[in-house]
Figure 1 (cartoon, rainbow over the protein chains, first blue to last red):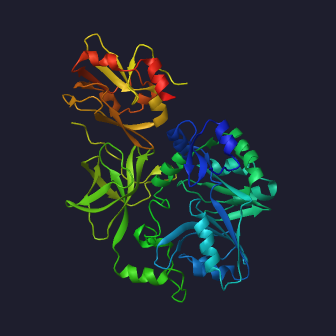
Figure 2: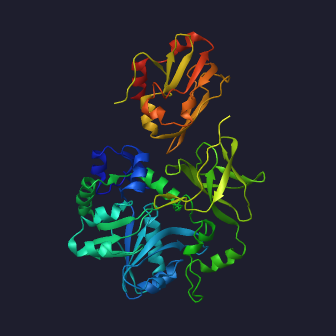
Figure 3: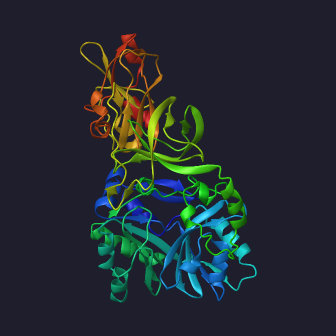
Length: 369
Length: 127
């Protein structure tokens, strides 16, 4: 039996095509995935992400606990409302999950974790919390709605209670404001400006419908995937998992080794691995026509050096792009095998698209013979 | 409701076949198939001159979500392919029975077409 978010009936009413995503019956698209993608790049789109979980970490040692738990350092979160992206590692340095942590006050931090990993995350949090004065509270009472695009913040602000609207409009990227149980973070997973809102389940539908009336396009998980891929953002379970360290999936920037006394979970293994790094993550653009897909083999100088972790059609580039994991010493030019044929790809540094702008040189289709 | 013209023949694997006055066959995918695939972003048609067996996978249509094979409804030789799909794969979504045709086949045995489904038979195969 698939789980439903509070917006499930609304998705069906809007004619969405539904898929099983990590045990949840979720919309993959409403009408056209491409139109939904472009709506986010040019105006505003919204995503039901209530299958993801908010988890509050409460108590006098909340900060100490998170400095132990996370690879990024919450010591950077010095004022209430600030947020940080981090990996949560196992003792081998593999990624258990990637998450956003918000600092609400000194005894209250909030994590937003992936849907498919929620159960194991909670078990891990509980186990690691032993010895710390903290309480782990899975906020099953709260749902999450992402509203993304150049016009997203303005459309949301117009609907917020006056107590919150002004503070929300003043938010800098990666920070949050809240009023009662309505929480607004200036974060996202699309490469565009926007908000992620956390709120009680019964308030999701009225907000969704008000945004719909304000011209915000409902977007499914399909568009969410093409948007995050263009933004060069990893998808947990695809670009990283418990066998991959953050150093091997392009997330070295999220690992904070600055405080040498901070013995976070996985640090020892990471430092041992860093010396002999086996693999690296790269971005690729297909030079000709076709579509790159996850798991396609990558070769350099005739030798297989790795595979694509995520690939797809990039609607903003009107071409195909991918994230790949290859041997650390592999050098371009690279080729990718699509249905038995090797195709030239160009290595680029993600992101591919940011704030509506293509950041890599245009994809030049190779003339067909 | 998907559109399934009564004057075409169909294969269970979602191809349609139209017999042209010169005896060649125009082949594409059905409205039902294009709707199920979603926005197409790449089409790889078979090369002209290629000899196909019946049910041979010979063409690839890729949507944003996934790549799918298209099969030869009957045996024959490819005599033309829709070059417009290189620049405009969305023609298959917009006009699956007209501008979105995939390739033209000279059948090895014209009578093979009689063995394909009619519109009612194809619709029945979907349920």
